View 1 (cartoon, helix red, strand yellow):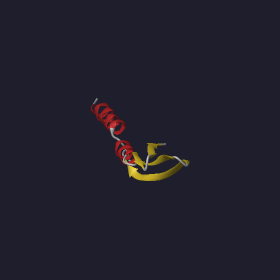
View 2 (cartoon, rainbow, N blue to C red; view 1 turned 135 degrees about the horizontal axis):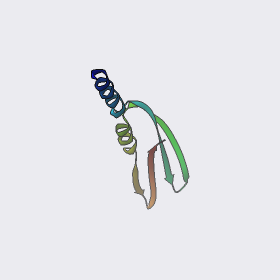
View 3 (cartoon, one colour; view 1 turned 90 degrees about the vertical axis):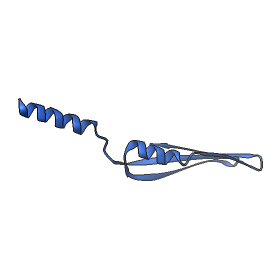
View 4 (tube, rainbow, N blue to C red; view 1 turned 30 degrees about the vertical axis):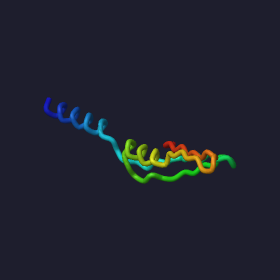
Length: 75
């Protein structure tokens, strides 16, 4: 009985912890002259950390009446 409890506890601990992985962030840049995309590797981190790092690249700005946006997301 003791082995079963230890096994079940170990299984739950392993399945509920978040592991670190390499994620790819893709940023799409829109400007009056067109659209371009850029991808980069976030490095080994948890999913929430990678998502936050990737979303830091989002921006929107207007320069001389022209709109420029960058939308980043994990792939």
